[in-house]
Image (cartoon, rainbow, N blue to C red; front, top):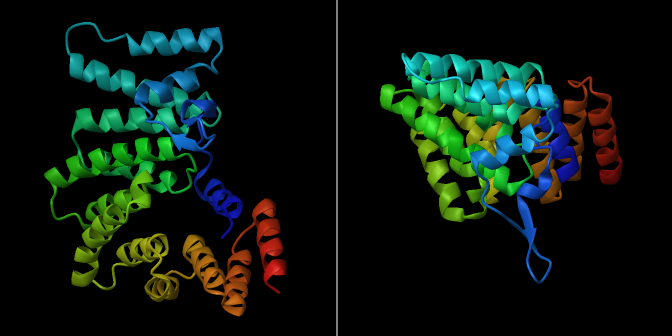
Length: 278
């Protein structure tokens, strides 16, 4: 699948997660090769805060410094929750700071439910992130949250799968051993429960990342049998078949996905892809 179509799919499914100031995450070497820089939480927050009006910035700064004395933990939780609400409701495309403060709140509350929710927020959106530095930041946040959740409940298969997926889809996806570490983590669940569609789905996506296309097709086909409206699985099957040169199969899956989508831009991209394959 072309990168433009892939990113459009994730925007359609999850919304935009790109920081407003993209120059914080890339730099050019003397040979003009663009490389990823390490991105910190401060980089992310400062990037978004730079887009605020003076009144909004004053409000955010006030919330950030509102904890002074007394019941510090509960005050901090309240402050983080207010900051999360602000970035979610008051700022366009404020997902990254919103997710960060949801994660910080979950850490303080130390609730398996909240930790897992926050981790999934990062995981679901990092796969649509094309900036390697931001993707790595998101993956690291998700890993930490999943790990804390698993300390509370080591038997939560969904959290095990999520943690494995962080290794597959983080910027470390360029390192084969990292991808295999994630796949092995998820395989442990799939081998115990072959009908766990979340595990099959993630293994299918991992198969595409690692170039194991036949295994990926087998797993994603099983997912679609159980979840016929899983747009991402269907489009990934189209993408893999296109990469393998199976044009007829690729067209079939693109047409299948098109019938499930009501986004004009995405339908247009799919139609163009089908034309190129015919």
